Length: 104
Ligand SMILES: [Zn+2]
Image 1 (spheres, protein in one colour):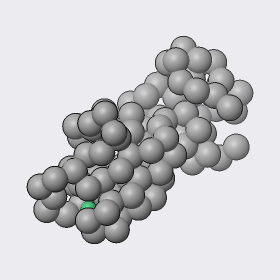
Image 2: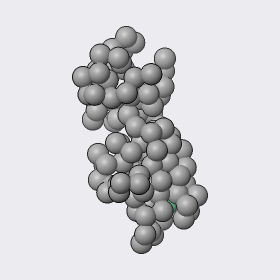
Image 3: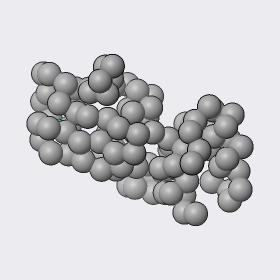
């Protein structure tokens, strides 16, 4: 498993968005940080995001890379650090369970 797959499995897009300061409503919608959004147009799902206003979409790594102006690799490292995820093989399940996250 690559670091990207590890992160994508462990961190839902919605949880990352909330961690980095977006206010997500009960329907999983938030004001889009990628365009001038007055009403929530950004849909945050478990494994992808999509903006009905500007068409931005991608997975959790794309989201954080774009939000924080990082490369995809830097975004993955940042998520691993912020969510306490070991990128060593074999540690994912333990850490994810400790965080109460869903592990398929
Ligand atoms: Zn947008």
